[in-house]
Image 1 (tube, one colour):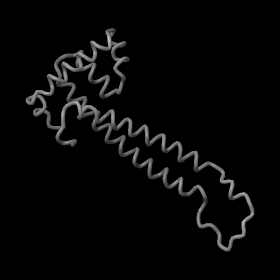
Image 2 (cartoon, rainbow, N blue to C red):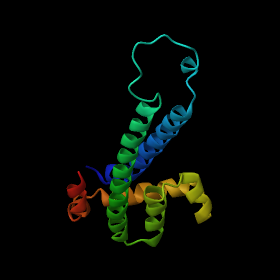
Image 3 (cartoon, rainbow, N blue to C red):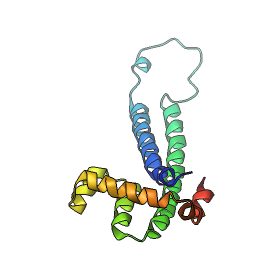
Image 4 (cartoon, rainbow, N blue to C red):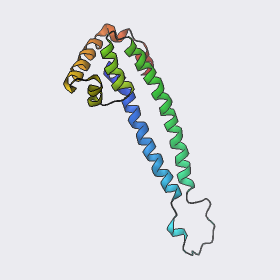
Length: 148
C-alpha cells in the first residue's frame, strides 16, 4: 500500500459513513410512513405476523451497527495517520496532510487557511508525497502494514 492510499483510507471511510447515514435516514423515513394499503378493509383469513414498519426497524438496527463499526475503524485509521504525519519534519507539510487526510478538508479551504494559492498547496503536497514514497520512509512505519 502506498502512503497516499494509506492516507486516503480516512477519506474513503468518511464517505462510506456518510452514505450509511443517508441510508439510515431513508430507513427511518420509511419506518414512519403510514402504509395506505392497510387503511382499506381487506378480507383476510390470517392476521399479519408483524407490523409493516418492522422490516425497516430491523434494517435500521443493522445499519447502525455497520456505522458504529466503521466509525471505530475510522478513529483507528485517523490515529495511525496522525502518528505517521507527526513523523514528518516540516510543520507546513504536517498541516497540509493533517488538514486534508485527518480533518478531510478540501484543498481550496486548506489554501485559504494557509493564505496561499491552490497550486502552491498541491505542489507542497506532491513534494511531501514524493519524499514519503521513498522506500526507506515507508518501511520504517509499521502501522501501515498492520491496518492492511
